[in-house]
Image (cartoon, rainbow, N blue to C red):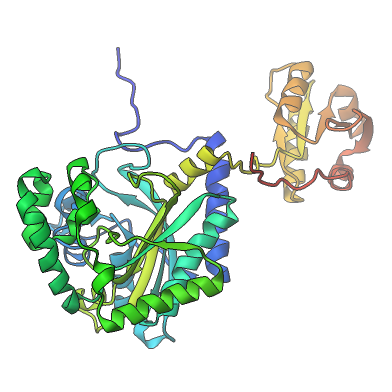
Length: 433
């Protein structure tokens, strides 16, 4: 017996019944980005592997364990895109966007790929909405991105979320803190996970971001970087908080928040459900990365950005009972019976669609009664019935399927005008229930 194919591990199908939430999120993301002045950019699904090895950081899980790296037939080392920020920075450099008015505000919605252990909210192929403001060192840019991130969830009807805000200072002043952090963890080395033991000397910030239970139990007593920020970073952090207060975006300071990517400096944030225990719960996160462009070979360029996973938003919408509008039903279902009626039905449906009226044609070979049952099940507003008698007269019957069930006859060339003139149903809306 032949084996049945299934989705690869760590991937999932988005079935028709799941599509309404996805379409709602994509529309809300695009509209929210537009309101903040962000323009869409699309980058390839694969890039030079070195782009992420340099940009994302060689001590991150993404580079160490999760990249889908491969060599193509020409011998070039490539990787499926695991995160959008380095790819967008590469595009900014390649296309000379430094000559545009700064900051350049860009957003993307794209598939990402990471070889990670599949679990709820963590897939090997996933979709991210990503926003980047490149070319501004000001705290208002940080606050703008945090507000954009927050307003997206607000627009979708999500509740009981919180912005967790932190700062990891600039790279130079951070060195003293890293020594304090190493001093805290060295006596605990044998109790750390193997990954954290290896990273302790090279990049101890990764220990605070680890999701391994062994590491999470030990970080509560770790020194907090927000307690010893440099003067400039402290002023920047205070300005971000002041701007968030002015915008009405609630937030809490998380002294141990660092994020898991090497390129961050100063502001970092996560947005997650309240009271979640922090494990695999954030649905959006971001931070400032003033040194990344230079790492990629460009001029020193300040920047800030965030990403949010659409799959995680869908999970949270389901958890909170946030519904999305169902896709609109067809306006008309064209049923037919008798010799020559099928051809007339195809022609009638085609003319209706040309006039912007969604029309479905009944299956040939099925009885008129079976087609009308299908018409009712489809949710169509009207059934257009073409039988032998109607065909002989050059007409069709129009049956109301949503009101009183009334029926009228109309010439075939007047169907669109008659159906368009009928009362349309109210516009769908999401509800919270």
